[in-house]
Image (cartoon, rainbow, N blue to C red; front, side):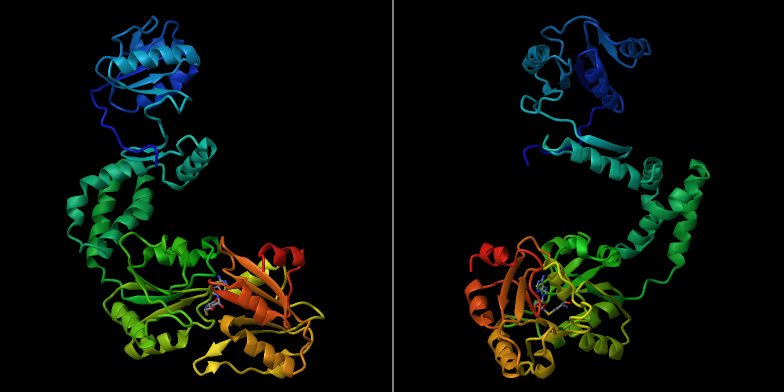
Length: 461
Ligand code: SAH
């Protein structure tokens, strides 16, 4: 971060703007929102400046800037649409001790003015350190749309009501009250005029005080394969509302970012052959939080109903009388097959697809190998990295062609996704050579649709 954002108290302080044209006016309109004492210095001021001076809103000095003009100024803007004059006046202002900014000249500015979303007293400042003004504008437009126009007055009225709201228990109770105010009751009352807002707050407070606390609940949520954009809207909302997020190690950091800052994040890592939290311990943890009244998100990679030991967790909840729901997610097989440009099913090739696990509690998992060995069959093998040789042996033994295509997708949907395109004959050797470290899904019977050879060369096997 090259520029540190701060909110400067400008009440009663001096701000000097040098320049009398469009650039100066643009900055002036922003500074006029504050309670600063503003001086504009311009040899040839625009008529708008003259009238602002006549109204007493700015002091106007109608000449070129001179040494001492920026004395005691907190901020100085050089805004001439003329580089030489900007350089001259900025040097003068610096000598006078002001923090200076040249309009549209990042390198020579001591500070820059962010894009601003103004819902006074709520102010959002957006900066890109000059890298992408277009992006700043897009973010601004997005926020302008999302933040209720009446947020300013709502925040002011809300602030005065904070003490009263302390009657509600700290934490979720109070948060629910404020979110109800800002996003529902407040804007609704505002349509009847500002005077309707305070009575609406009173009303809302008595309703929230009377309400029984929300019961604890656990949502078994699918986090998808890793790309945060592959989360469902529901998953996003629940993550945002959760008091506690109990997540697998496979869930990516980008997704955990979506939880509230105050939420407790508990990692109950389970890695195929690595360190893991015993399932009983996970079950116990979920139930304890739900019974304590927490809104729990049990976040599982992919879809929670696919190789996720979901039933064991649900059974424990049912036994303990803990309320639960299931939110599906995109399973790894869907993300992996998408990366190949293929479908899981295809007319006249395969009318069924199987999701297999490479190993189960007893070791390598047995399957209907005879059926899987038939030409055109497609199977998605989860947790299959270690079982490649076993799977290969079983399939060949049951008559599968050695040339059957096999694709292994590591880190599907993530920035470090890799695709290994091989055949049943070379699978174990290619896999060993590729030394995949991330989660990988094996698709038997499918090759990448395009440029197969390029893909396998690219990963330099
Ligand atoms: N519930 C998950 C699967 C959990 S089992 C789902 O629906 O996807 C864990 C296995 O899923 C891993 O061993 C790996 O085979 C697969 N997997 C999970 N995320 C993956 C990813 N991003 N890319 C490839 N495989 C993944």
